[in-house]
Image (cartoon, rainbow, N blue to C red; front, side, top):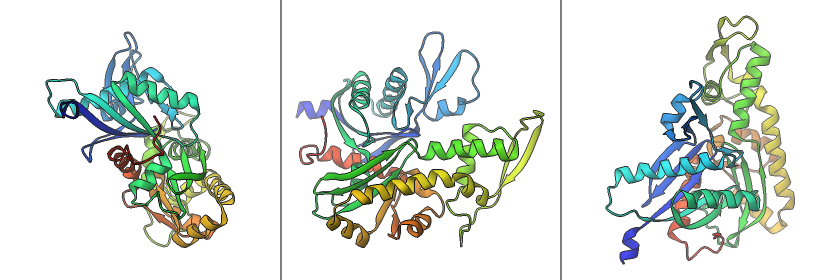
Length: 341
């Protein structure tokens, strides 16, 4: 009883774009995965939204780092500082006389190598985690949208996050066939940056490209409804460095994202090819579930249906599906055999 009082259980969705922490079934942290560090002494200056506000605006003594690239830890030290900083957000809201023992379930991309899994475990331990479990992202996404992962039926989940797109067929509490590709939200953002340079001769930063994606992003060049207005983009002309303003339409964004979306389509087809016929029949009947921030791209479900001829369902609250699933796994640590130590 005393031990349970001293233990704090956290479910962490350590994403390339956002980190979400669930404690007591509530989302207590939902912050961008970014830190600002003092270059002179390596100390943490800001984490999450505060660090993102500094991104692209720092002077020589401050650097902003996104510790995760393509779904895996690229900067070990920054990742540790970020996890520690975000856990502190909870401590500030909950005053305690004792430093609690942290039990964590952290989700990782299904294509993670042993080295990448070790990096997540080590970062979590250095940030104060005592008892650490891992869960693969598509399994967490399936749990988060209410799929019975232990049923003898096939379910297919496509989780389009910031760094990776995770595609998996799940049945009987395990992943039957899967693929993890490094084409996702960040890739869409850099496609938009490149397009603006090449077509409009205008230089834009990551944050502006992200805003264009959210405001005028589309997977189809012809949308029947929900057509976004052209988006005004301001920035320096690459040739003259003079300020310019151009209006970008959703048709242009659909064109510039086409190659990346085609890679996701072929990855989905690749996973379907590996799927046993009985499970394939279940998937055709039930449809494929879309989660992650990329699921919010206008017209994506229709584009995928036109290509693959299987219905696609956008999950309710796709941004938090993986985090909620990780929270469910945390409550059922003894029950789910697919959790890794």
